[in-house]
Image (cartoon, rainbow, N blue to C red; front, side):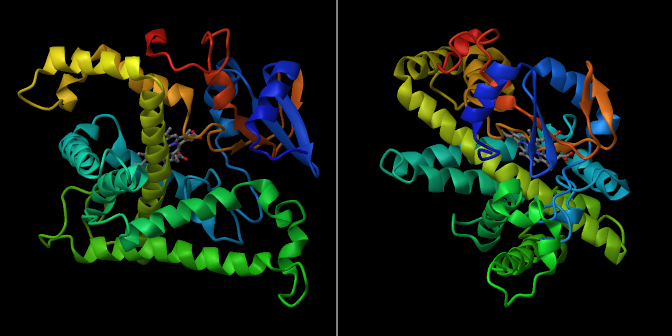
Length: 368
Ligand code: HEM
């Protein structure tokens, strides 16, 4: 059994078995969806059955304490309520409220890169830029440096989650009884990891939230932000916890995805100087030299837009999405999908299907 995130193996299997790969790991059924057609059929058209997340002992449920975070929790009322908070703050109709901070953030990033010897600290600068934007939108908090405590907590949470969410990282995912092991028995080292991750989750969920709550009316806080919007009336403890969890999810969701997408953009530009030059020519022609590009200029910059789309295709930030789970037994095109199967959208395969994207490994914005 290769690593569950071994994309090369998944691609081999997709070539061998077609649109759906079915495998089992220590009895756990895993269904990998290798085409947009089957993703649409199952995840969208049959969303009632495929909106749950995997029920892994180490990850989403009892051990690490992630069971109430809607991005990975069970599909239930709590999930709906947290998701509503998220939608209220990030649906397409409210996104324009972030355009000005995005523009200012992009300018600051450009300046930081110019001042930092052509990007010697590229990753740290992007981390700061992405983190500042997300922290501001979620908590109204101003991130001053890439070593900011709240920002570090957010990135640490994502690192922990990444490990916890890999089923093969912890044997306890496959043998749940192991969670009852006494701590003195050799092989129970994972219980220490559990304690550490739990404490870090608690800190990441509560610290920035409490900052936001106590600074709602102070001039240290940027408005509007998710927490402020959600705490517009007196909340019960359970409601407050819900807002704090929804906020932590938005924080986690926005960090690594944007960081890796921006890093891939820089990589693509370094590897393809002629594409960068063509984009620069478009910007010079459309925007001129008297001002910097703004979000409102997007429609007039089709080549730049294609570069962004191609970056997301070429190296998707979440090549296997976030796994779903089947809530009930299902039959799809004659194939049986048992209840509890982990269902993985193979975004990598779909974005690199040579029948849709010719020469898929090459970076080519002209395909859009
Ligand atoms: C390049 C940027 C991004 C990419 C590629 C990306 C990708 C994804 C994917 C593939 C999923 C799984 C969707 C599903 O299973 O239905 C997801 C879920 C999620 N993303 Fe993002 N995302 C990005 C940016 C963001 C940002 C900026 C935020 C927060 C402001 C965010 C917050 C979330 C949350 C909270 C979820 C869980 C949603 C749910 O379970 O309903 N993401 N994202």
